[in-house]
Length: 116
Image 1 (tube, helix red, strand yellow):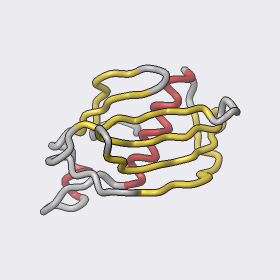
Image 2 (cartoon, helix red, strand yellow):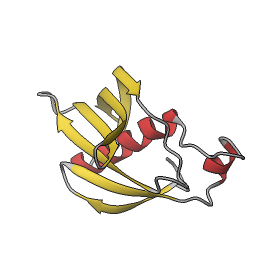
Image 3 (tube, one colour):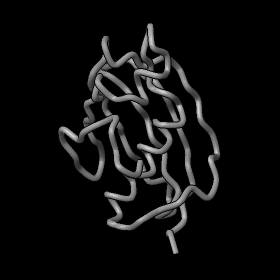
Image 4 (cartoon, one colour):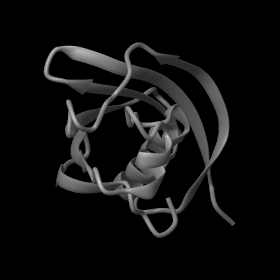
């Protein structure tokens, strides 16, 4: 996210990243004010940014092959999540699982392309 205001990277490797949500974020607070949740579109964008960090390249999303939002992430309840990354045979095709310990929140398969 340009001018990221919703998360900070706690730890990072080529296989996973731990991120902490900023509970003071206006984006998270607006979605929904009485019970803030992380929008699914933000999780997709975070996946794009984190895979870009792995490849050390600016990426754009070419195609979302599949996405399944399994459970809602409430930053007040789950302030940190783990993004697991698996390259799917093509350098620009990735599987991303967002989880907290054993609980999965989202599963994605995304094809990227390099930003021009």
